[in-house]
Length: 554
Image (tube, rainbow, N blue to C red):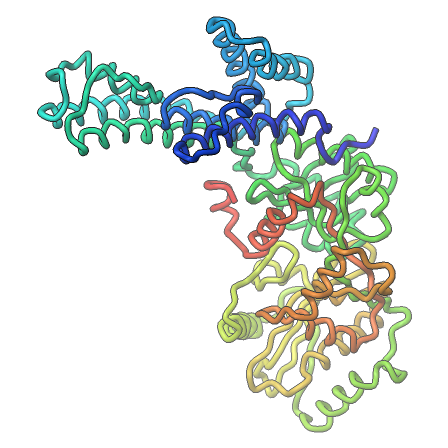
């Protein structure tokens, strides 16, 4: 049975009501003198604490907003906390003999939490939970010390005279926002200090809730890497498989170990490297299992750069899809430099061969000589420095001498001095994808056209099936009447965006080789998750050492 991309409507409504209750408390606490009183409406929302001091209202608002967000994400920890708080709220209303209309909202929430308990399966970060349990007593003792020592130092401005037991009691009452602390401040400074105890309590509560409700962070090395690499090398017949196989990704095994999903997690978003990889009849099961895996870990699933052929699988599961790129694919059995569409490439080759007779090109299946490798590393570093960028990673190329032995290189040199190079990464099915294109400032104009064209002709001779020139991001060559509003927004961005990646010029450059354009898409749960996904995509492409990710999270 296909997974649901979004929680049930009733589930979202209940979470929203809890969040609204928190917002009413927060507004009432921070804006308490406004003539528009929120209390009559706020009393009807589940768990709303509609009477109390300003600090107590703010504390209640912070807790309820955190719980509402957690419930909306299906978090088990938020369900546990909400169950306790709603039970306490019902008992409190009963003890105070409130009208039944005020008891119903928290009672309905309590009943719903019990009935819908099986929907709250999202876990929290175990390390965060351990830290919260360790930090809670430390913060509590710090709060007591702060309040007690402060009252001792201000004893001349607070009555009655200082006593340790009374000071501790006043600190605890101030921490929960009580109006009567049992002590009276006589100066503005003393009054501000007693108020600050409540704000200390609010800050500590926020920190504990954040640790308890944060998504799972992967810190262990990937135990599935070896098995996943085997699956990818057999079934990885698309260009992203060249990046999915790398150990900087995590690998989820699905369909009883017959398929795998390569992914990275950052800011609570799990971004895949393309579609699941495995036998075609296992892909749907892999999508469902990975989605469930994300729900259990409180991650937003994002299927990145998936192929058009499999879009229906995602749409059946109520996932939204958005075209984000066009991949330029060269089918080598059809490739030729003849024809008007290849005229610019032919002119570039003829110009270089005519004007640079000492230029020669050498191909390497595997690591080149140490001298050549050293030159490549220098060229790569200088090229990045001139562009003012760093290596990117994830599904974009980066220079790594350790991986050169598994790549195909085309190197242009003049009398032993390397002027430019391109690298290609292999994937299953006799295919390669273009990785790096780097050159020195004095390299001949059109040197990249020259190297790519020569590489394609060489790969054609070696019976490779296809070569990918990689993606042209934010490009869209679909007919106008097929575009959705989101697609039109992407096209507008493509037409006007000018940055370090120069998306439009990249599209025009690849277009010269007359490739077959194949759309690449993003599949995601809902529009409200899109901004967070955009931030996550920028972060995963800004290469971070794996050790940092393992120790601190992404």
